[in-house]
Length: 76
Length: 162
Image (cartoon, rainbow over the protein chains, first blue to last red):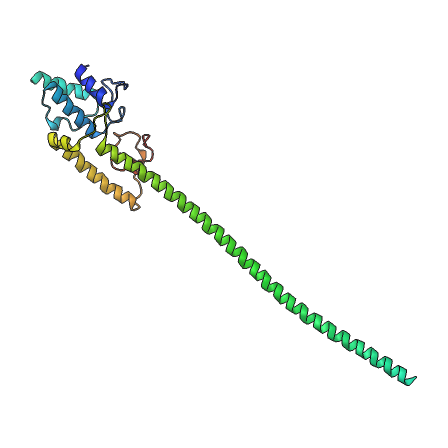
């Protein structure tokens, strides 16, 4: 798993939380839709990438975040 | 002899008359006592009814107080719930800045706030007595379709985080 993404997720949801690709940020980490927006914003800033907003609307799992990061990291 | 008989007769008549009057007086007193007794019994019945009514009122007040406390607890839960929604602190201690989020991800935040607005309308409906839907009652996870992000403690009674 991308270390930066993992670090951002742990910093946001809790260092003690087990974060796996299948982890659902809403159900498993106690987050809400604004947390998802926040996390993606932090990822964009730290990795210096741009993720179009319309691609982030229904994101819930860590795997979906990783896929997005991979897609836009490659592009940039 | 005749005189003695007359005196005895008069005495007997006097005793009988006195007895008659005494009994009449007793009967009158008894009637008064009975009437008083009836009044007392009516009074006691009324007192009993009053006490039963007071007990009922007290029970109703207790029930209302419990309902009020329960509503208060739900409102407090919702207040805390909303506080974390718009003023959440993440694990690293950073407080959510909704303005900053809206500035940098306007479409996402607008979409979320529009959804929140719809849910707030639903919260008002519930507060005005609208029954919960099956979907709302069935919610166990945030991703379930009936989840209400604005008043989950009221709208989703089976949601575990509540």
